[in-house]
Every structure is written in C-alpha cells, then in structure tokens.
Amino acid sequence: LTAKVLVIIPAAGGGSRFGGEIPKQFVTLGGKPILQHSIEKFLLDPVVARVIVAIPEPLLPGIARTSTERLQFVAGGKSRQESVSNGLRDAGDDVDLIAVHDAVRPFVTPEMFHALLDAARDFGAAFPGIPVTDTIHTVTDGVLSSTLARSQLVAAQTPQCFRRNILREVLKRAAASGDEGTDEAGLAARYGFDVHMVPGDPANIKITRREDMLLAEAYLLEQPQ
Ligand code: C5P
Image 1 (cartoon, rainbow, N blue to C red):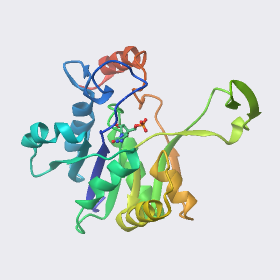
Image 2 (spheres, rainbow, N blue to C red):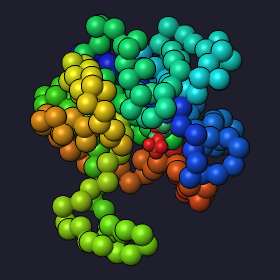
Image 3 (cartoon, protein in one colour):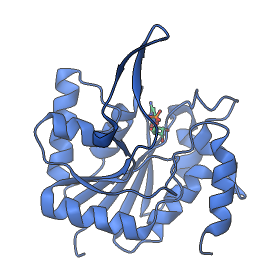
Image 4 (cartoon, rainbow, N blue to C red):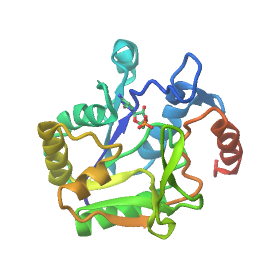
C-alpha cells in the first residue's frame, strides 16, 4: 500500500457506561492506559503517517506535551462525531486515506487494518463487521416492540476507513443537516456512499463496561510481544 494514511482516534468520551471516575480510555490495562495501547498499534505501523487523538479539552494542556511529529492531540467535542470532526480539521491535504478508530479498541491488528485500507482505496469506504449472535429486539418503555432479522445484522467495529474527501464530505453533510450517527460508516451509507464490509475480528473488542476489562486482560496475554 503506497497511500498516505492518517488515523483519527476519538478519545474524548466520558465513559458513562463504564462507571468510575476515570473515562475508560484512560483506565490502565497491563501497565498503561487503554488509549496508549491503541495509539501504539498505529504508530508501529509504517503506513501510518500521522495519528490525531481527540481528548477531553481539560486534559489537552498536559497531554499535548507528549506530541511528536507523528502524534498530535486536539480537543474533543460534545459527541463522538464532533470529536472526529475536530481531528479532521487538522488532517491536511497530504493524506489519501483516513481511518477512524475507537480509543477503547486496543486489540486492532495490522492484518485487519490493512484489509480495510485496501478496501477504502478500492471502494471509497470500508468498515469491519461481525455477524451478531444475539437476537436483537427494539424495546419501548421496557416492552419488546419488534424483532430485527438477525441474518441481516452485523455489529460495526473500527477502524473505519475512507478516502479523505469522502470522510470530509460525510462529516460536513452531517454537521450541516444536524444528523448524529454513532459511527462514520453509517453516515456515509446514509449519504449514498458504498461502504464495504470487511470481516471484523472478535478479539477487536470495544471496552465499554467494567466486565470487558476481564476479557481485555485475557486478550492482552495472547498478544505477540
Ligand atoms: O460513546 P461511544 O461508545 O460512541 O464512544 C466511542 C469512542 O468515541 C470512544 O473512544 C470515546 O472516547 C469517543 N468519544 C469522543 N467524544 C465524545 C464521545 C465519545 O471522542 N464526545
């Protein structure tokens, strides 16, 4: 892959589902913050020109001191989408592909990442998806209201990868129309872009709830050192 790649990591969430004082991305896993694991995965990858991390605004003065030429920090926004947009503002026109990755997925692998970059280069946009194993219902006021067809459902992971101009347009349109998505792939599809699915990785978990730490510690032991 010869393309120049930028990675944006939204890491400005409060982590309300995790509980506790510290947002989950700053919780320590194997001696360092989860966010640092995620950042290092990309810095180790020679295709990555730059990583931009959106962090809670109050932390910016302290953390920005650890910036390097390949690692920069910006203030996050009120929503994930706003945090990604803030990162994109500093993207520059020298990158071809942009990957957006959840701070709290520290087990991303280079194999999956590169498959996504290839698909984004070829088709414009790509995301990692995993067929869901649970049955998914919608519930209104505590009562089941409908059941979605499981055979059509996939759970979306990150990194989600885009040609630079596609991600720019998607976020611009979302901001202009007030659309809030929970991921960029969904927004891109909403605006008519083809978003290709690449097989996700069951180990690429999103550390969301406190129980997820047990799983994360187990996966950490399995990682190549
Ligand atoms: O809350 P959610 O599961 O969507 O969070 C996904 C990612 O987006 C996390 O890495 C979180 O830190 C980030 N986020 C953010 N700014 C927000 C909300 C979430 O960067 N305002």
